[in-house]
Image 1 (cartoon, rainbow, N blue to C red):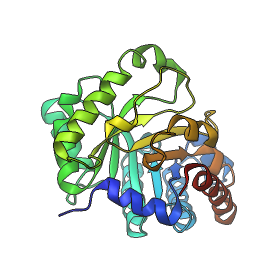
Image 2: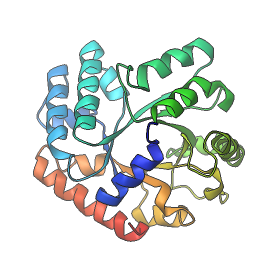
Image 3: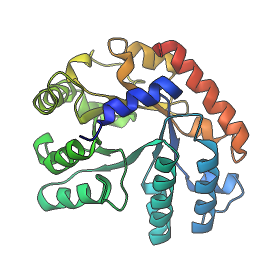
Amino acid sequence: MTESFAARFASARTVRGPLVWGLDPAAELLETWGLGDSPDGLDRFADIMLQAAPGVVGLVKPQSAFYERHGWRGIRTLQRLIEGARSAGLLVILDAKRGDVGSTNDAYADAYLGKDAPLAADAITVHPYLGLGAMGAFVSRAQESGGCVLVVTRSSNPEGRPMQEPVEQGLLREIGMLNAGLSPGELGPVGAVIGPAHIGPDLDLAAAQCVFLAPGIGAQGATAADVARVFGACPDRVMPAASRSLLTAGPDASRMRDAAGQLAAEFRELLGC
C-alpha cells in the first residue's frame, strides 16, 4: 500500500523540519538574478534551485503560474523541476489552485496526481468554491497514490477574508468528516491551506484530521511566531511556506541554503521537531 502524504511529511519533518521552500520565479526575480525573464532564464532558475534546496528542506512548492506564463517551455521546465526535486528526495507541493466540476476535475487530477501524471506532484492546492464534493476526482486519486489535496480555506491575502471567514470553519468540518471516512484514526489525504497572518475566529484545526499548508511567511507578513500561535494545538501537522524572503538571497545557492537553513532551524525550535 502506498504510504500517505501525511506519513511522508512526518518523515521529512523529522529529518529536515517542516519548512516548505516556495519556488516562485517572478519576472522581477529572474531579472534581479541576472537570468532574464525568458524561458532560458526560467530553466537556469530551476537548475539553481535543484542545487540549493535538497539537503536543506524536505519540501518545495513551485507556483505553477510563474512557469505557465512562459508557455510550453515553462511547463516543460516545471515538469523537469518537479521530477528533479522528487528524485532528490523532496516532497513537491504544486501550488496550482485548480478546481472545477465533473470531467474537468478528472482531467486536472490526471495531470497532477498519481504515478502516470505528466506533472506528478506529491500534493496540489485546490479551490473549494464549487463545493468540496466536486473535488472527488482529486481526493480519490490522492488517496490511491499517497498524495494530498490542499483546500484553500483561509488564504494569505487580506482580500479573501470577507468571503472566507463565514465558511472556513464549516469547510474544515467537512474536511475532517471526509478524512475520517477515508482514513479512520489517521490523517487523511485532504488538507487545508491556512494563512497564519490574519486574525479571525479561532478555528478547530486539530479536529480536521489533516495536514496544513501555512503560506505567506516572510514577505507577506506572517512570522514563525504566528505559525506557532495559530497551530499550537497541532504543531506537528503544519507546513509553513516561505518564498520571496528566501529567494532574495539568490542567485547564489550557498547564500540561499544558509537563509533557508536558518529559517528551518527556527521552525524546528518553535514547533518542537
